[in-house]
Image 1: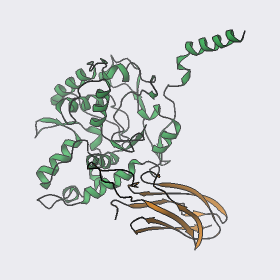
Image 2 (image 1 turned 90 degrees about the vertical axis):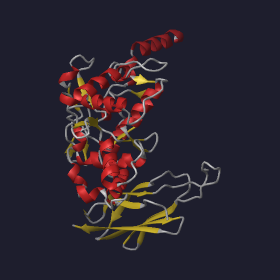
Image 3 (image 1 turned 60 degrees about the horizontal axis):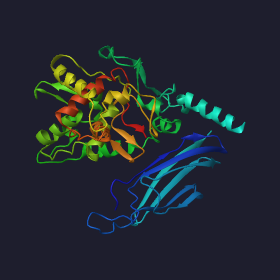
Image 4 (image 1 turned 180 degrees about the vertical axis):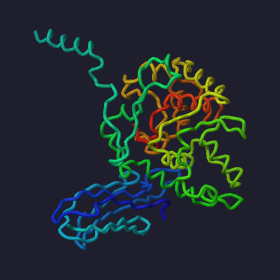
Length: 109
Length: 284
């Protein structure tokens, strides 16, 4: 498992029904591309976050496939419409099979 | 006719070298929409002879986009390293079974530290930097290996400690027992080094606000250190930056942690007396 991986999410705690809110996410991760070599000339194995998803009450908001050229500590900022009170579920998928999750609740009214 | 018009345009551009807008801006630095920072201040008393009229944080010399990164802790990439520093703070290391938290409890106990360092240490009989204090603690109170002076772990820890003093004015003491070191630092600041024969002052006092090739010269203040640089995507320590600057004059540099750099850090910090502690800041 990659070291020092920590997901972070910034989302509003409340919104009006139907309001479009800005969500910022960041996960600390080394995003090793698999292209580099160490000082002995051996290839450093690829280790990246390869997929990021955000769901709201079970409905998908974004689903991102990620590639090795994405730099360290990937950051995503996007907008989402909040139709009703509920939970944003964030999921990051690591090459090594680890899954990192975070949840943010938003109330309406 | 066309030729003349072009010549006129060229002449106008030559006459207005400042038209590239390299001057520092007048924006206000407010972090997280609530914490107002002092980024411009009157000259400290000891700088009366300096060739400038006020002191300014390097934040003013950066583009709006870079400035914005520092205005929100979520956007500030330096905060990732603060989190890593917090893990180090709580990690037990060394032969004594201690972590930083064993004695100092919460990192908030470090409030005010960054603002007054480097500082004369009576017991050690020398001027000490935050980094020296960290390693002193690691070696003597924890029985652990010291961090490399400009290592990532050291920068993480310095960032965590700096953050506790964010917004407080820099206030290093330059008289009393620290005066000798301060004088030494001042001499280094005004000494020309390297094949290019440049002193710190040539760029950061005489030419701040101007471009040095493609980059924008600031006053070289260190109130924002350790600083996250976009160019290398990690935290940079003050001594690491000093080394880079002197290297750029094509000189053999002093070593990070050397007496010369400690003296220079004390002197440069004193040039920022009155500015808010910003660490970890975001720069180019």
